Structure formats: C-alpha cells, structure tokens
Length: 288
Image (spheres, rainbow, N blue to C red):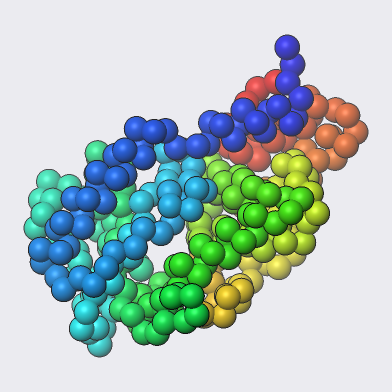
C-alpha cells in the first residue's frame, strides 16, 4: 500500500535512531577512554555531551562526545589538545587518533565508531550547578561552553505543550539532511537552531517544520546564534568561511527542495512530495 507523507516520515525517523548495538559500543568506548585519560592526566570529571546523550543522533553518524574537565589550564589550547591526543595514542596504538578542533577524535572500528574528546577547563559555575568551561576554539585560542545549560535548553523546548518531542525530532531531521548531503555545518548549531525554531510553533508536522527550519536558516544566512542561556558566547555554524559558503549553497538547494515537497503535500500530490523529500535527504527517504 502506498504510504502517506506522514507515514513516510514515521518510517524515516525510526530508521534514523541509532541501533542498540551502537549504544552498547558507545558505552564501552567511553569506559576505556575515561580509564586512559584518568591514568595519564589530572582529570576532575568527564561529561557526556552531543547527540548520543541528547537523543538526537542519526544512525551511523552519531559520535560520542566527551568533555574532559582537566586541571591546570595551559596558555595554549594546542597544548591541551596535545595532552589528550598523546594520552589516547598511548592507550590505543592501533587506532587512528586525530585532532579536529575543538576535539581529539578516536576512530574505533576503522572509523565506524568514533568518540570525540574535548579538553575543558572550568571557569565558572552558574545557577543550578551549571558549569562553564573554556574549550579549544575552532581555529585557535579558547571559547566558552556550558553543556548542561545547553542540554537543559533543548529539553525545555522539547517539552513545550503542543509540540512535546518536536525539538529533538526536528533536530534529528536537520542532522539527517546534513549527513546525507555532506553539509559542512555544526551539528550542535543545528540542534540549537531547531530547538529555537520550535519555540515559535504551536504544532509540529514534519514536512512543514523541516521546510520552515531550513527556510529560517536560509533567511538568517547561517548567522551566528546567541547563547539562549547567556552562559557562553555565540554559536557559529561552520569552522571556516569557506565551509560556510559551501553550507549556504547546499542550504539553498535543501530549502528549495523542502518547499517543493511541502507545496506538493499541500496540493495532495504525495508522489511529487516523496520525490522531493528523497532528494532532500540524499536518496534515503523511504519509497512510496
């Protein structure tokens, strides 16, 4: 039987959720990395952040993100990254360990299971035990982050009456668009923008809201986003201006395809809607 567009999104969303085996592997890698870091460095605590922890990961693309709170902050963020990289290389000599600011990336299982480890240094504590850290910035130097505050923001948006669950669903869709089209844009930026967008909506319909989000991002031209919790600086979409220009080009295409899918949906033309949704998600949307 032919699917409706809503049914297509239900199948698509279920296909995006990471497998239980991936979550088990993630827990195992976190344990081994924590042991490695604690044996080599002065570690205060380790926080799990990112899409796995937030419930917004995409199957096959959900890295485990760990923020390791270290003592004795060096002058250079390059030094902090070197400390973490050398500790992990010593523990995992047959695994690729590389720098990808602000993190050190450990590529387990030939890169199919990756963990990103971000060195952080506590700078302040806000209300409700929210911790603010200095972490390596995209190019050099340091930037602020408050992972607990940002997760709290996403959860608050996700629990709003009338759109309960929508912030995380929309974030997962936005990340699927990113991964399936190789868009060089920050997953964290997409997650925060998706949560912010949902605060302007009174209901959630996937085909409407992925179009609305992409068009909103396009109208803003991927402008940096102010921290809605005011604990850290602005959130930037890309690590360089060249990547931002590439992302904007792909965003223009994505927003156009999402609009054509929505127009077809509103015209009761599901075949055309499915066609453009499949283009939007790089050939990964379920067939009708």
